[in-house]
Image (cartoon, rainbow, N blue to C red; front, side, top):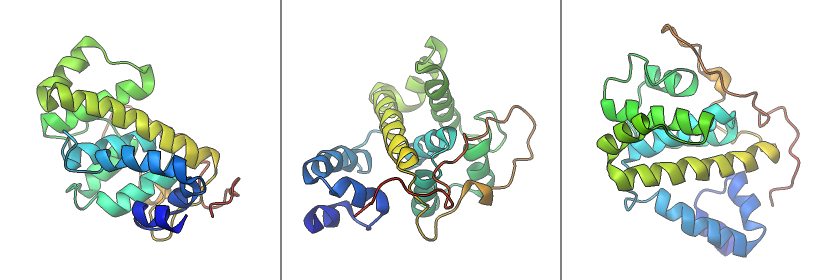
Length: 195
């Protein structure tokens, strides 16, 4: 198990949970390595927008907090964008780049409809290319799976990672898709042992 955990990187509870079964962990590691690598056709910023938006919409505070703490600066997300990706809309004024809007619009549609309209597909492909669109679909689906594990296992937030409550309500007008209730809040009792 130690060898598998070392391959994952920081000893997060989610990784410890996966590492309980080395064969499972190796499979997950292979998948995750591509999506967190430079081989991904999406930019780091695109990737983090997909992950943060997906996990926020699912209420997966654990995974959202890990990615916000680890990658928000690298993705060059300002406070307004962090607030918006968590509780706002792709139409918020903070998203001036059409690429950001296309990525967020696609994630919103996938999470709500489990499909993309022709118009959303066209805008997405124009922004990130066809291979980028395929990677976005898979990444969004992958983080649904990760979110399901974190939520159902009731993983408590990692130390020094933010909670949804740390992000104040947005001030821009328009409908606000609130995150689902966070079962992985620090007060929830974990359902499984992680080591």
